[in-house]
Length: 96
Image (tube, rainbow, N blue to C red; front, side, top):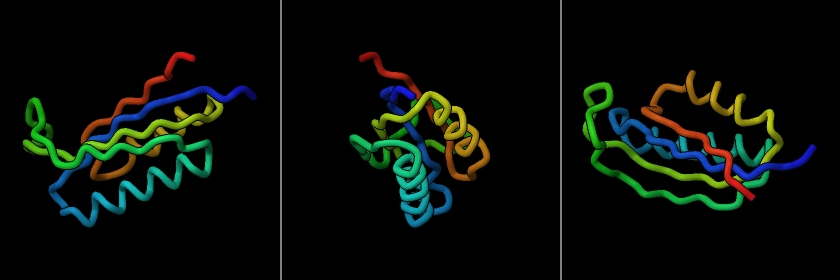
C-alpha cells in the first residue's frame, strides 16, 4: 500500500490537569508510531479557545504530522472520539 501524508490537530481539555494532557500526548504519538511514520510533533501548549467548548475556555493544542496507509486515519479518529479529555480534533490529508 502507498503511504499518504497526514496532519492532525488535537485540542486537549485542561480540566483534569497537566498530567492527563501528558498521558494523552504519549498515547496518541505512540499509536501513530505503531501504525505509521511520525515526522513532526508540534506542541503549542495552553491557548485560549475561540469559543467555550464544554464550558472550558482554554485548551492544550498539539499538531502531529505523519504518514501511514489510507485505512489508519479512520481508526485514529475512532480512538479519539472514545477518549475522554479530547475537546476537538481534525485529521487532514496533505497534498504531495
